[in-house]
Length: 141
Image (cartoon, rainbow, N blue to C red):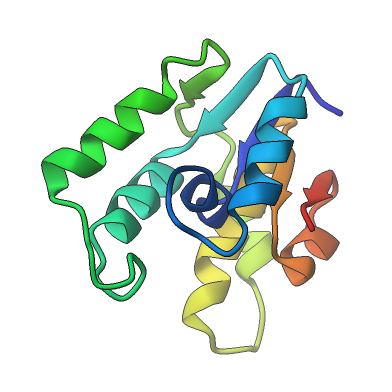
């Protein structure tokens, strides 16, 4: 595994919220040996957005302030960092999103794939289709 792990938004959410995949996320977190477990701006915003979404949070959305508190608490682990967008992101982002399909979900997936590729990171995900497209991924159960 690479020394840099790049979890997708659902992995971060499962790690900190009442989520169907909470236990697999916690197990991965406890066993991960990466030097860095990275947020990008998209995964940061995605987590904050989902923590304040009533449907996602079973009718109990967090306030924006509480969402920031949960996010900040993750940084108590010295592995967690927010990684800036690499300068070469545009080409792989376009390559991954250059498809005839029409899907709002594919934009975020293409961006995550491009970030992981440019960072040389292992993409951590529950999404089988996303894991299949990533050159280096870890599919959580």
